[in-house]
Length: 384
Image (cartoon, rainbow, N blue to C red):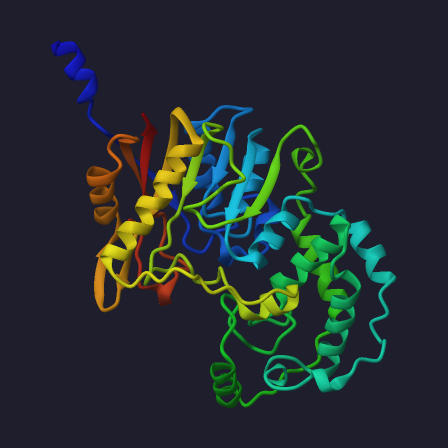
């Protein structure tokens, strides 16, 4: 009996992984440099977790898929990948990242687009003059018309490329000086233009697409992203209701639940990217404004995750700190409460992996973090 108790009460492990706060794409395949601000998982962390808790040929589910960066790493590691995301813009971008086109195909496709075709300039009305030169806007509209609803991976890959440079703060981007993360509001952009004394200048679209495509494909197209042997699917659904995923079919689930007031969602959504992709800006139908709201949401998400993860499989939940209203919240504490009170029959906590900043250079939030600070905590759960 004592031996059994020792097994049941085995101590939880505690591990650490270093992250570069400015390197969400720096340490991964070059395809990760598209929409690097929309990565919820850094490439080294993804590799560490996937190799640690799954084997080649296993099915990995990203419950918070964002723009598909986890899918690239899973393919490189020989895992089947399924991604779930609620925002239709992110669905399109993740699918495009997982089916890239060759640089020669991109260049050839651009040659068949008439960038100088007349465009009804009545479309160039508030707020677009705050972001684009009129000629840049007309070229954008011609590309948009050519690739919209495209059936080929070349068209969808061009959509991804443009989405990654649609706004930003360098001349490589298509907008005037703006945030490279979430698009500013028109009011914010107008104030920024006044402060800098600038109006958007002309940015030729075609050469910028080609330059960005070359950067994304610097490491080539991995054979795993060309093969049909590995699943690479992305579907639109909330994390707490994933009918596309079969029961007991997943070996490892990565979960990054919505955490209001945290930095996780910054850059994931952009109304300008949604406009470019021809979808409505995403607004969650579920309001999370209290700890009770978050507990209900986390409970439903992990209950659905328990349905799809096979017994003995794992879920790794990424949590950090944020705010609910004016109250600071440690979401790991909230997660532990939910697991203990609602989900103990499905999950057991195996341990924690702490993400720590490896260096202070290039830190987010104005350099307020220092080396050794905790970036997030990964709670490892085993399915009973």
